[in-house]
Image (cartoon, rainbow, N blue to C red):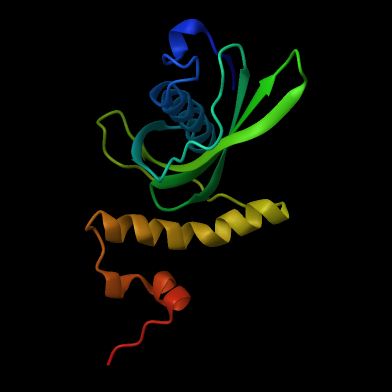
Length: 161
């Protein structure tokens, strides 16, 4: 998805407002999840979004989103944000984040989604880390007990005494 930063999108420093960028990120990641699942999707969570370099008025913003892994009804989507000052020819990475979407039926109930099959090395790396990120999200949301997060235990080498 490509967007042009206009005056109405900026703060008083003429930088893109964070909320506007998050709105664009939500849209592009929802489209990615819908294409993968061929279902209606709803945003379930957004991981940490850090605002690296400011995106200025007049920059062109390119957002790339890809489903990294699918679970039963949820999908993790990775978004990369790049900005470009066309007159100067300068491009830079600005942001990235992971969004989670749940596919739902017409009544709003979760519905199964197809598996995501990684092909490139980058896709395989993101796929492998998705289970750890999912378990961390669930623990932080209080939907999983920390001792049930087996993938996180393997990272931190937790042992019960």
